[in-house]
Length: 224
Length: 199
Image (tube, rainbow over all chains, first blue to last red; front, side):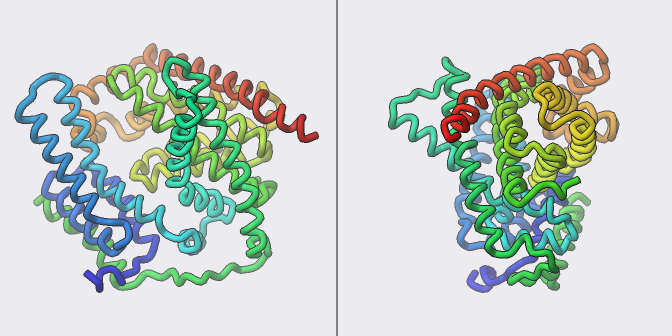
């Protein structure tokens, strides 16, 4: 397990496997899907800090829930829930890969996008968006808590007011964040017109190629 | 085209794109209580709620390339989240909307609203474009597990009937327009007044 945590994949490998997963997501049969899920679980276990156990537990709980709905209920609502759980389970590998990608350091993401020859004008907002995805979701939750402390009810009965109280603090705070972030990256010389180098070495290693190969071929083998 | 944007503008576009995605995703999830309702109003609710985000973005970054980047970043994020088909639909849409903005104006309220309404109305038909591009058989082969036979039958019934497409376009355009009104209200209340105080 200690050795697994030392394996560092190229960020582009995660992106390629995500694309493969999105094509396979609903095209694979159950065996093929479980093989793909197993490969992603192994990749996920390279990142010890992200906590693989909670994903396995939540997946198992969803499976149990699906079994209960399928066995003990036969209403239209239970069919809807079963389908919903099935879709969620099928999307699990993509969620897991997404979580790995958004937890990569922005420097690594920028370096890998540059290696992909993406325009600097796309690389910058894309990296910011990926970096801020978890932060903004946390912000929404914080604002709801702050509103609760101030006895402001964000309810469906006052939809416009509630939406305003939820959205505007995030947008205004984002503008301030943009100020600070752009000042920070300017001081690091991002606007200097030269070939940019990176502290992170971005290069496909044999392990990247093996994992991509396994992700493409093994799930298909499960369909035979 | 993108050279006009400075680093701060790019950061703002990145953050606002991700906020729009989250808001739109939550709004669409609410309509998923019924497949039929989601067909009619899935994107429309998103269009209503994302309106203020889009308008405030264009208020802060009224420069060439903003609209293109805003939609393209969302398309790439969707692709990274496993919905690569969205990229095929969103990038041409981003180019069309950017051309409209370049030909018209980034500073006139009417054209900003018009651009948003048109963009959201076309975006609402992403399911239909998927069906027209890949055909009914491809959708049945790949998405039956996800949507069920009934869901795909409904999709085919909806998107191959011009009247249904017009209804979806109409609902989305109407709610997108309401979204722009909401956006202008928020801008007036929170941004213009603050700017006046500062000046």
